[in-house]
Length: 554
Image (tube, rainbow, N blue to C red):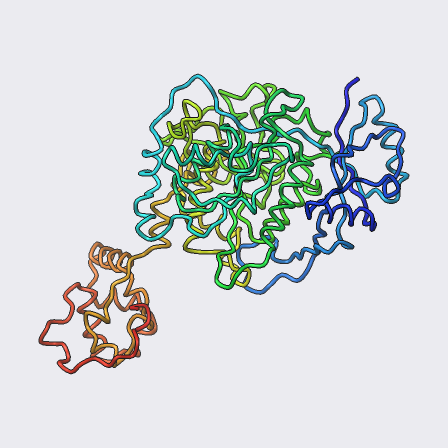
């Protein structure tokens, strides 16, 4: 007799809420039979104490919101507004009777497939292409570090088989580690940070390529030592809901003033085949159903400000994983294709798509994958190659953590929303394949060099060179682009190529502001744009007024 695993969504009742709160607090808790409807066909899993699922409510879309698709939604996390998840099994031959039973239970909000999930392990057989130093150079990691894009202060949750911190340290990766905010799927499993070396340790290593100073949270979701029915290290979506509920609590916890509120969540796992799911159109389906509890809690965590990265999958032609059951088109399922996550395809260090990388369109959102990351290189030593989209995703997660060092999440600033960061990564990507977006590469391979140019533009300190000028007007504050050496170089180069004079370039750059300039201001700016500057004889011999700095000049 075969069984189907089911998640039941229950309406609020006091017993479920109390059991959930006790479990979250680390206290002994169990499901109470009196709080649950009885079934002839459904067997409860007594080890899975009820898990609260926040209520997402519609609201008013804020003005001038450009990026965040969930800006008009609010999350009510109060116990009475939440629903509660429990899980269990139904024999395949009893499914019809179960559906009849469940429709008669007023306390049941819905039921869903509790799909098996597993990591997207490496595609064996082909040799590594380059190494992690190659990836560092491709991402301009040395330049990132020069401008403090290194992940410092940013939490990175490795949702995987668990990590081994000692192994990472022995192999040159020394991230910070937060044991208190880490999590493991079972109390009998080894402590977070000391789990035997496996897939999760490779993932953590690859995050550290671009974010060596990030703070790792070990979220040991996949059951590396207790294989699931498929025989591979995995878990179930109900476990993933519990892990994400923990991360939601981490994200919403009080922070000290000034503390970085950024959280990057790496997921190098997913569902391999729809054979494990209810069919598309069934209300309990996962692959195409935004109402599935796991898809909802993913959206909720993004609403709280987390950057969520998912591997696209390893079901691409011509080298699909055997668990894909021969399906190699439209294999980005469920949360891996959510509009609220960044879905990552794989290219090697020659920028060639790897044969196992899943291709779009995605099931929840068509334009998946979003971006490509580097994979199949020699790196952690856990495997002969850090491969699969399993490695591509953490490479991208590390870059996102580096971005968050410079642009931390701020709930009051929509330009720091997770959607805005996805837009930033997509808009700076190096296009691969057909021009523009395509279903093999997304918007292209992540471009660390362009991100450094965007976030770490060098500043010319005009006020230190010409302090007398600050007494007349604050050039840096009034015309900040003139303090930007990258903008200046491009402006001069473009005007020269077009045969323009410096005055024409200046007028175009400043627009209507140019008409308000005094003759002295025009003379100074003309000289600056043509890289001649003011001579020593032009400088005011009187000491400059000490006003504590001039705008961007510091």
